[in-house]
Image (cartoon, rainbow, N blue to C red; front, side, top):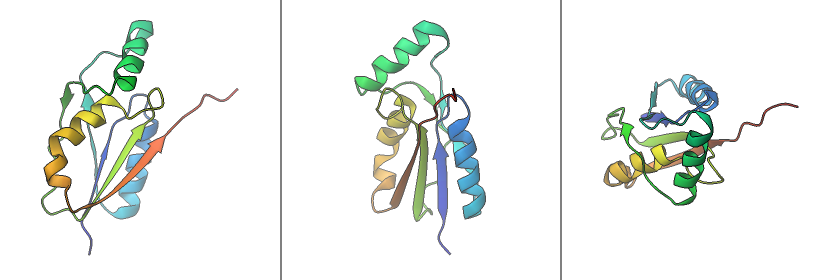
Length: 115
């Protein structure tokens, strides 16, 4: 049986819900990359967009998922300013060697408020 790891970034909870659903369907757990930057309010919103557009990384709490036995990795993240979320970018840069040779799937959420 294939060993799959689900890792996600979520600001508003939508990506968390998707990651948990995928993990349930695959019979594994979902691990959260925690963004350590305050992204609340207008200043936080602007900082978020700037970091995403500029391709920056950001400080995170790494879930320290053991990727050594994983065959596949599912990454779940929201779209930030039409770019990858900086916390995921940080995680990917830190784990690139461990991801080599693995199947990687990316699930991107783009939640839009109804109305």
